[in-house]
Amino acid sequence: MFVPAAGGWSPPDGCALLLPAVSVGNVGQLAVDLIISSLNIPKVGYFYTDCLVPMVGNNPYATSEEHAKELCINAEVYASSDKKLAVLQIRSPLIKNKSRAFCQALTCWIKKCAFTRVVLLSSSHAYQRDDSQLFGTPFRYLVTPALQTLVADTLKALEWKEMEKMSSYPGINDEEKKISIPGGGFTKRLFEDCCSEDIHMAVVLKFCSEGDNIPDAFALLNHVNRWLHLLDSPDSVGPADWKVPSSWRLLFGSGLPSALF
Image (cartoon, rainbow, N blue to C red; front, side, top):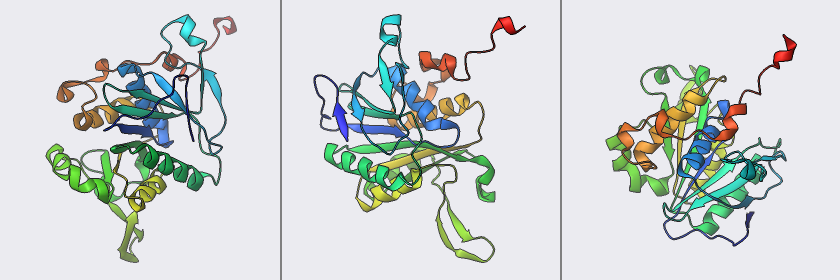
């Protein structure tokens, strides 16, 4: 359920939604951090749900000590009327067995807001790739049938590669294939729900491994920017063009106290 901040908010006509999956390396969440920070998108409300692990913290995008005192929770909505863009940031994992309920709540909100396009940023385990996925680009996409006709030519021009369907029983029954996104969290479930609800939705993901996934986040965001043009001159955008949020200083902890040595 969306809870607006003071002053209220409703999506303008033609508004798109960007959100991350809680997936391997937190790549989607890191990419969304960069989007919110770089475009300086203000917070407009919260996505209240009992499906996510509760959490509270300081403002991750603070640019001054005063703003750092503001609090953030596990799911918040940011929006820019000028860019006709809404961004849902998810900061904690799903509670066990709550994936279906969470995806249902998301699809209900998406339909209620009538977003023209939904883009889910995700990731998948690099070590579980099929042989055919070991070569070429590490990026893949999926689009719902409702969006396919609208973006097929654009994605073809970008030379993007669609996520391959995998055999359910390799070597035994290779004719029965289905979408498999290991490490992708709720990605597959939300995509299938959006397919059945005729929602204009796309998944863009990167194969990666756990570790320092900041480079993966930059790479995924630059890849997406070629399509969505979040920043000008999408073909020449690099890591230096994105603004790193202040919270990333503590991404790997605060370091060891010098007094220990």
